[in-house]
Amino acid sequence: MTMASVNPATGETLAEFADHTSAEVEAKLARASEMAPRWRFTPIDERAALVARVGDLLEADKERIGRMMTLEMGKPIRAAVEEAAKCARACHFYAQNGPGFVADHGVADEDHQSFVAYDPLGVVLAVMPWNFPFWQVVRFLAPALVAGNVGLLKHASNVPQCALELESLVRRAGGPEGVFQTLLVGSKTVSGIIDDVRVAAVTLTGSEGAGRSVAEAAGRNLKKAVLELGGSDPFIVMPSANLALAIETAVKARTINNGQSCIAAKRFIVHRGIAQEFLAGFAAGMRALRVGDPIDESTQLGPLATARLAGELEEQVEKSVKLGARLVCGGKRSDPNTAYFPATVLTDIPKDAPAYHDELFGPVGCVFVANDTSDAIRIANDTRFGLASSVWTTDGAEREQFVREIDAGSVFVNDMVVSDPRFPFGGVKSSGYGRELSDVGMREFTNIKTVRMRQAAGAYKGGTE
Ligand code: NAP
Image 1 (cartoon, protein in one colour):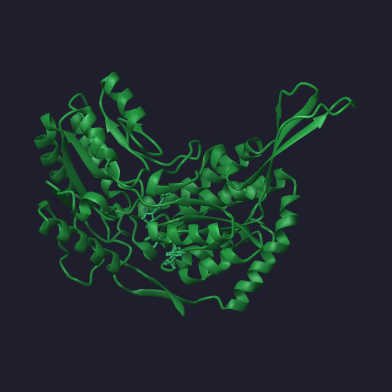
Image 2: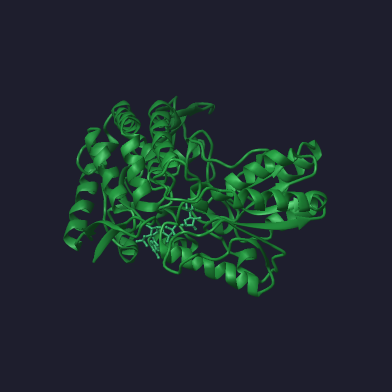
């Protein structure tokens, strides 16, 4: 099998790569497992210094790396360059703070000297998606390497150039052989790799289907897994909000990365009193986006990552309209073979429509009307997902109710949801489990070890388990 790198804006095949053979996969697994004990006992300052150098390379090379992302998966070029810069910042964040996050910490304990230590787990497999082809990987790689784990990357099959570049970056930064390697393999090989005794744990960012399959393999092997899956995030707007700012942010939050972000706002839940005004302004903002080749700096909305994904999104919209949803704008591609999908707004969406209960991974905003705060929360929580949420209100009591009652991994107030290395990132329900980023994410792939050392020699006092 081969993996093709195809520019979704033009359909041009940029490069092709042969899948790794089973012998090549075996060699990489062997190298990773040989490196794991050596890397574990490499002083943490050296591990952090490697990650800092990866950050330096990302910053120095962000224009070239950004261009690679844009050509391979279609994100607007400025956003791609900013993604590379954000990766650099995350590397520096973990190089600086990571050692403290996994340092021993003492626990007050009568006649014992006690502490908690964080040992690395060993070889961690990362199965990653194409939508933020560098960020998704680096937010795993940076904390994992500083913590003393080694990484194996199985990237999405449509971004082989980014996948190979990530391995090369770590090597160029001075990473020893085996500390971070890319496997060019299809998704069918993933569960066999998880079965391998040399792999200690797995992290997946991707769809629910991939999550089920990775969780099954990890469960069968009793291995630690972190799952970052899909989302259908609510964006709630109440009458006290700054409506103009909320509308402007709603357009941005729905169309970031051409609408292909797990934390993009997907369901706009608007109080009845301002619903007409919001809908008109939101649809106008969506229609006004400059559509074009993402390599052009002025483009605001580029193609989806593949024509197949654009076709699947079109089917979800068509089915929703057939079931009674009202199409306010967009909805149909100009050509059945193109990856470009128009900015689309749906409203009056019935409960059985895909637009009500599934994730729409593209520039399609779904507008719902709520009668009051409790009704908005009811609609927001009426989903199998629970990744993030954004609420727009200046009323303190309302804000408190949203913060406490929304079932999601984060609540942003009067702001757009973004990931940030300082804060835990992840979801509940079908959005997955475990966390990435911050100190919490870094410790996911550690053995949190309790150490109790009795100080004075004396009779054992006994105790319960
Ligand atoms: P995807 O099809 O699930 O692919 C993600 C990765 O999983 C790819 O490397 C893919 O490999 C692999 N994969 C697919 N099916 C698999 C299986 N059955 N077993 C093992 N591995 C499998 O997802 P996508 O379309 O690339 O990405 C979009 C999804 O990711 C959306 O649902 C989005 O919300 C979610 N996402 C979540 C987060 C988060 O942090 N929560 C962030 C970004 C994206 P192949 O490419 O070889 O199929």
